Length: 483
Image (cartoon, rainbow, N blue to C red; front, side, top):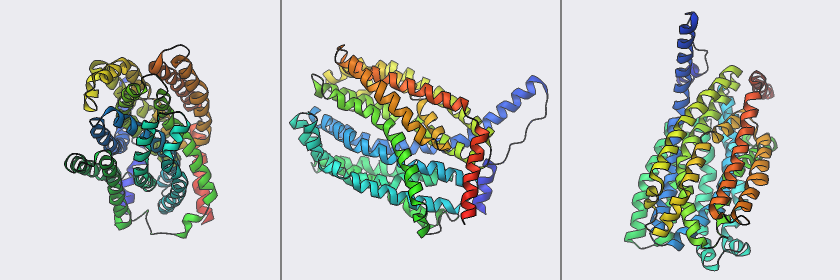
C-alpha cells in the first residue's frame, strides 16, 4: 500500500486555481508547469546520472587506452563502435518495449504485470544476445572484408572478444533499468551505476598502469563494472525492493511471447537505427586518407557527443515513462503537456552545451590524447559537434514520445528513410566526390537527423492524444479480461 500511495499523486489531476483573468491563468499555467517539471525530473535526474556513469565506464577505458597510442585508440573506437555499439543499439531498442508496457501497466496500476514483462524481456534479449555473439568473435575477419587495414583489424578483433561479457551484461541490465524507471525507482539505477564507475576508475588504473595489462586490462575492467551494476539492481529487485511488481519467477513470462517479440523487435529496429547512425560515421571515416588520425579525432568528438547525449537520453527515458503513465491512466491531455515540458527543458539545456562546445572546442579533447595532429582535427570538427548536440536535444525526446505511445514500428520506417536514404548518401557525396572529408560526411548525416526530427515533430503535433489514451486503456483492459 505504501508503494501505491507514493505513486498515486503522479496520476491524480492537480487542483486548479480559480482566480480569473490573465494573471490567474498565468499563475495556473506556471503551477501546472512546475508540477509536471517535478514529475519529469524525478525520472530525468537519476536517469541522466545513471547514463553518464555507465557511459563514463567506457569513457574511462577510452581515456586510458588513448594514452597508450593512436593505433590503440583507433582500434578501441572501431571495436566499441562497429560491434559493441551496433549490438548495444539493437538490445537497447528491444528493451525499450518495456518502457511502453511497464509504463502503461504502472499508470493503470496493474503492478503484477511489470514483473512478468521484465522476465519476458530478459528471455528475449538473452536469446538475441546469444545470436549476435559471433559478430564479436569474427570481428577481425569482418573488418578485413570491408577493407579496413590489417593492423587495425587485428587489434580491434582482439578487443572485441573481450567485450563479450559486457554484451550479455547489457542484455540483463537494460530490462532491469526500464523496469525500475517505470516505477519511479530511479535512484536505485543511479546509485548502482555511480558505485560501478568509481570502482572502474580504480580497477582500470591498477590493471593498466600497475599490472601492465594494457588494452586488455582496460576492457576487462569495463566488463567487471557492467556486471557490478547488473548485480546491484538484480539483488534490489529480487530481494524485496519491488514487492508490488516482483512476485518471483513465473511461467506467465512465456505467455503472449510472440506479441512481445514483435513489439521488442520493432523497438529494436527503431532505436538501433538511431544508435547505429553516427557509429556508421566512424566506420566510413576509416576509408579516408590519414584514416587513423581522422578516426581518432572523430571518435573523440563522438565520445563527447555521446556523453552529453546522456542528458537528452535521460529525457527520452523520462518522456517515455511520463507519456506511458498518463496514457495508461487515460489522460491524453496529461501526455500532451508532459511532452511540451520535456522538449522545452531539453532544448534549453542543449543550447547551454552548444555554447560550451563552441567556446572550449578542442580543449576537452586533452582528456583523451596529447597528439597535436589529432587535437587540430578535433578543433576543425568542433562546430559540427556543437550543432549535433543542439539538434540532439530535441530528437531523442521525440523518440521518447514514440516509445511511451508504442509507435516503434512507424518510427523505424521514418528512421530508415531519413537516416539511410538521405543522411548517409548525402554524407558520402560530400565526403568523397566533393572532397569535404570527415566534415562532409558528418554534415550530410546531420541533415538526415534534421529531416527525421521534423517528421517526428509533425507526428507528435498532429497526434490525437485522447485517442491514444483510449488505445492504452483498451490494452490494459484486454489484459485484465484475459486474467
